[in-house]
Image (tube, rainbow, N blue to C red; front, side, top):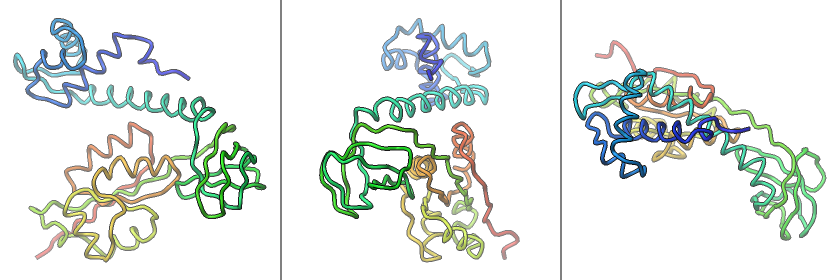
Length: 266
């Protein structure tokens, strides 16, 4: 497995330039991009011309650039490929020389061969139940506590779990007071991991007596939970939903969306 983007220095630089434009649009200073990624301003200018011509960037002035829908899709596609490659490196290569932390199902002795499995997003080690993934304990461990495992062999096939997106209104449209709490509560109570994006989301969960597992960095956190086999729900303000959905689609993570805004309220 190899990331195509890494096979071309030009494409990698193009990826960096486009990412910087996306981060600083619409007022983009080519000199600042050049300094940040270590190329000349002239080179940045050439990349900008090329990407404008190919429809990845729209320009309406000398320093005014905006990334197009095609540009966003190009970034997401390549970013996803890079992420899959890095996961391959971590899981298939580095795992053989790294130390992994697992929770002991049994009392385990140092240098003993242990079998590994993932449950609710965490690694567990046992002595007798063959999971097809095994390694060597680097220390003695008591049942219920962590242990270090090295020389991991085998492949852990963990399917990305679905994320339930619960869209709620911003304060200008009523905030948490305009959320259908009766629909929200059973959804939240059925999921093991809960995220919140926006103060209105935090207050919505407070109304049903729920404290989220994560608020700051919630989007990244629930994505990582999905990759670790943990289903989750994220209560999110409406204007953040499109960006989050694009991220999930780019990473091929399954999701469902529920609009919990109340309608026809007096």
